[in-house]
Length: 126
Image (tube, rainbow, N blue to C red; front, side):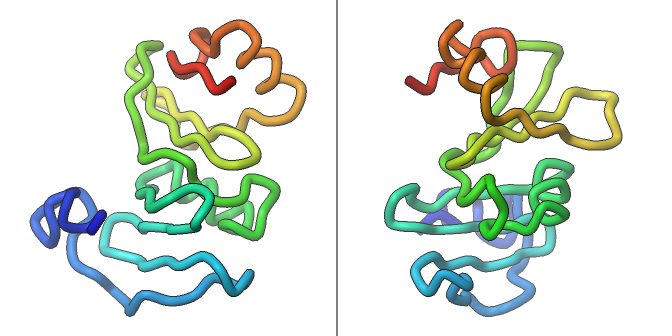
């Protein structure tokens, strides 16, 4: 179970604040915790989202937005000590000391992927 892998109550996400629920598409599932959320979909698996990246995704409409479901847990970027999550339709990045996270998608994300994605997150998603 993802929550246990992340350390349970004493881990990254803290204690659950609600029960697991079904997403509006009738397929995905989610659960919110004190410091983040876990979302699951059969195409993406279970992935955690937290901090400013989660705040940005929430403001955009969670999985109902153009970003869809998270495809990765939050990861470290080799660029400027940044952090990111990959989503079905884009990437949300955060670089300290920024007070908010930023979305990369569409043509700009495609160009980054064609270049090996190194300039933003250090990963390739081909």
